[in-house]
Amino acid sequence: MLFKLDDGAPMRLKLPEWGGKRRGAGRPRTRAHLGLVGPGVPHLRRADFAARHPVHVTMRLQPGVGYLRSYQRAKIVEDALRAARERFGVRIIHYSIQGNHLHFIVEAEGQAALSRGMQGFATRLARRLNALSGRRGGVFADRYHAHALKTPRETRNAVRYVLANYRHHALEHLPPGWTDPLASARFTALPPPAEAPVVAPSVWLLRVGWRL
Image (tube, rainbow, N blue to C red; front, side, top):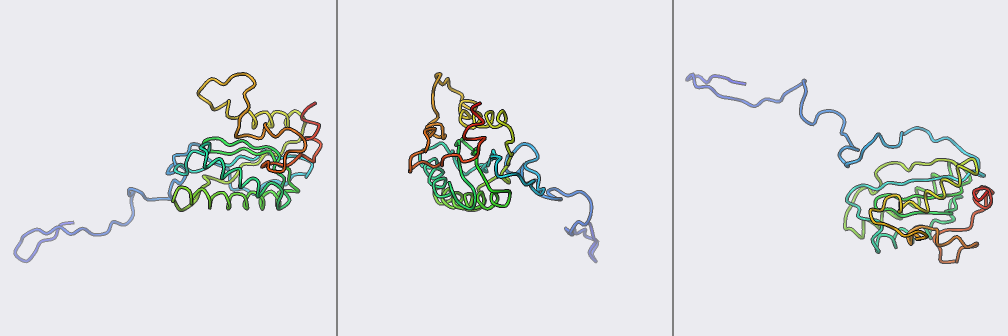
């Protein structure tokens, strides 16, 4: 805005601008800022489910946390799984570590137990991943996604998807019969060894039903 001094010389003052469209105004676009595509997991109340139904859980990480399939980060993930594999009413039966996300098949007593279990696991994992990278702040890009599995077919498809997930993402050719070393397929013997990051299934759909 221009004003004139007593001698007639112009003077420009920069005054605050109120109203109108301004660069950077409005609610921050959090997911776009993170480089994520899609609307994310809706912040709605999660539906409860019966304890006899296993759950497929997916957790996605923010950019900058690092490649999860690197040796150090994969070890951190598996150590966190060992600590959480049978706590808070949640049992971790299968898992798969991908570059920027994790898949699990779990048993849970209900939605409240699943939330406690995933929160405990996420807190432990985030603390150790941040310490490794020397970073601070959030590690997970969104709420975890959970889908209850209610039929043998649905359970079979989910288990196969989780165990073979790296083959789905891999750019290189993988030979037939290849087993992902960063998934629970190598612990299919019942019961899994004591050092495994998973426990044996207890519900019918994961013990018998998915194999039918």
